[in-house]
Length: 232
Image 1: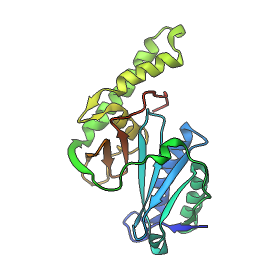
Image 2: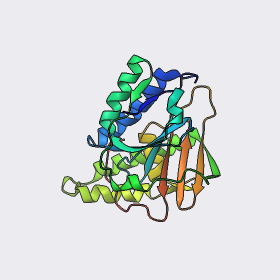
Image 3: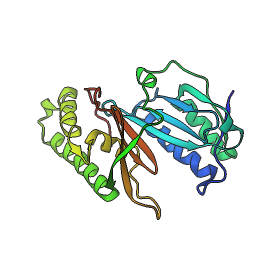
Image 4: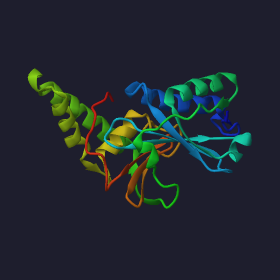
């Protein structure tokens, strides 16, 4: 079993790093109890990329985990159960920071098409308060318009169509489906004493919204058409 360890020299420390990753995995599992995540890092790279797909129309969520010790030397590329990884991470947070990587599983199709490692260009910067406000507004509009529908029209197809209409709107160079995903995953929290801005980056067909808590990326030329309605 490959054993990884959280970086112990960061300000946050291994316990808080474990909590952050556990919260991310917990969000994914709330929407899909059988969720899988792709893990990727290169040898000598001090961070592990954890990729997941929340049900927001083709977006990919990325959580970076700082690694320390011998874990930095091990290249990782595997798709694993989010639930099993969560169990390992919770145990690591309680026992000192090291965790064993679960065995690989057959991954979903999205796991084979990840954003590029390099080539990202910073194309914009958005104010954190503004991004949070627009995310809250669109969630409130969805709820209000849903409640205004007659009961017989509150079908899955009707709600999906309404969500698609809202999330296709643009804000600051990204679609609101990306903003909403970042909001729902807890990536838009106010940083403690830090710079409260959100970066917009592009690389080829990909657009990415990045905060200090994680990123959400989408392929603009081949974004998935459907959108599954999920709690915010």
